Amino acid sequence: MNDTWLARARRVMPGGVNSPVRAFGAVGGEPPFVTKASGAFVETADGETLIDFVASWGALIFGHAHRPVVDAVTEAARRGTSFGLPSVAEVELAELIVETVPSVEVVRMVNSGTEATASAVRVARAATARPKIVKFEGCYHGHADPFLVKAGSGVATMGLPDSPGVPAATVADTVLVPFNDLDAASRAFAGGDVAAVIVEPVAGNMGVVPPDEGFLPGLRELCDRFGALLVFDEVMTGFRVALGGAQERYGVLPDLTCLGKVVAGGTPAAAYGGREDLMRRVAPDGPVYQAGTLAGNPLAVAAGLTTLRALQADPGVYDRLETVAATIEEELRHGLARRRIDGVVQRVGSMLTLFFGPERVRSWNDAAQVDRERFARFHRAALQRGVLVPPSPFEAWFVMAAHEDHVDQVVSALDAALGEAA
Ligand code: KE4
Image 1 (cartoon, helix red, strand yellow):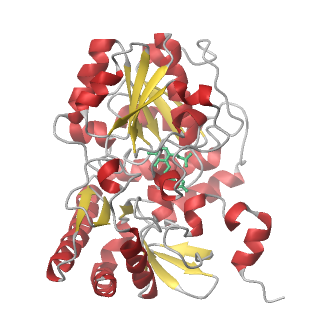
Image 2 (cartoon, protein in one colour):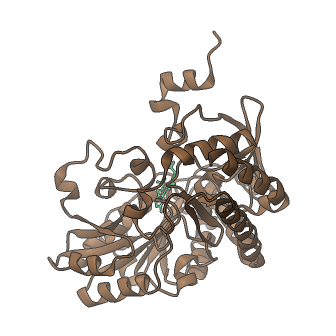
């Protein structure tokens, strides 16, 4: 039976994937099936070697199969893969998160970004005894019911602004506001009852959309004025745009923070934390229930500890990541200009997005104008030249330290792909 991996996968998994965006629905063609990865490269079942900018959707900041992380996880596995009991290493990771993320005083490990954001919202609703949450169009906070209302990322790409299966009651308390629109945000408070504002401080799930000057401080001020909590979803920006995340980079302290991706060094784990008075409400200190069999498991903790300690020990890595990302940004900008292709590159630190069409993207309404067809052509052309960028115009590309040795190859492949997409 000359089955392709995709045919086999489709028979037993929805879309043949374990997460929708991986199916390449937004760019067409068959997705690669990875067999192994190392540094900047992924190798596919078809025998291709690709320079990868998906980087496990931002979870990898050094590179694939980063040796210190692999060694730490291997060593941890030898001592047991899961205890379901308190462990020494979990304490060390919690202490390191508290030490590095400015607003986090107490933290709880969970297994995914979705768990982190859903738990943080539950704490906020408990602490304020209010039901409403404000979220921003184009921001994605995982697939928990309250958030699946015009979410960005996969849902937007899939054209499913409201997912079936989400009861109206569940989203009745979710208020949607355009990103970077403080007036609309303040109007969202008008009806009162707002427990929290949850925001990606740098939006990454409609493509990279930086906060306007004053946007984050404005949200802080609104929350303080109306007695609501400010929740930063730093699942993507945490340990990515600075060691202390966007809250360090922009100097705005939220009440609760959600972390993921880099915090677990490419293994399944995430976290939420923040002000001590809020986090002490979480069971068993307090009545807000949240639990997880594999929360704080030793493999993810080993990967997270190794990654965060390496970042803390080498703060220069952020400058090096930024230099590579800035080079790619500049070369793409020149390529667009030289070919008179309308579009813009937006970047914060080592996360960036190429938008075909708009000259600036400040909100989902802007991002929704992108030329999806041209992006699909660009994506395929880059792939044919050995460079894999995220298979959606609404995703961030992530630079890893391992990209540093391949910048010239990347830039020439991307420029040629621009030519083909022109
Ligand atoms: P997970 O539940 O997928 O671990 O995290 C959800 C999440 C929460 N918050 C932010 C800011 C996120 O970016 C994410 C997940 N990001 C997407 C990429 N845009 C994950 C990729 C995917 O869905 O396959």
